[in-house]
Amino acid sequence: MNESPEVFRHSDRAEANRAAKAKTLARWLWDRGIDGDDLIAFSPAHRRRVARAAGVNPPSGIDTWAATAELLDAKAAWVADHPGHPSAVRAHEDERAAWVPEPAAGSGNTAG
Image (tube, rainbow, N blue to C red; front, side, top):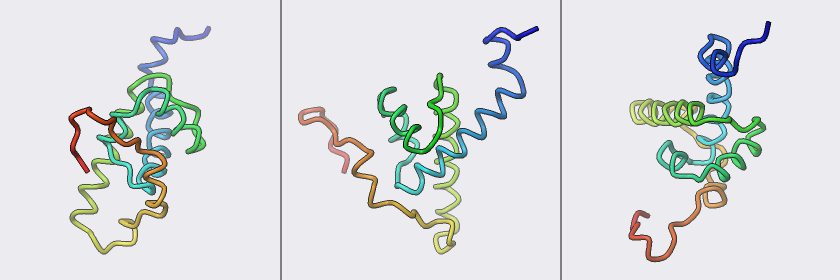
């Protein structure tokens, strides 16, 4: 008998699938200099484009994206403690501008 989608969502297998997908996404995003705050600010459509570019079937809910953002934040904290480690290198940081949209003019966002 098949499980209902809601039951599956909370199963160990679903958790493992989300964790594996989040890890793949986090690696791809890390290499491009994209952090957890950037990711969460992306629109759902933009996150789907990111997932496809990372070679991942786009997650259907926010759970996987939230887990990805947590992994990115944890990696940033680790790198702060190990700045010279080879794992701190971002292999494709030059691609960040292609993936992180500039704030709209007049949006009040002066980060930069």
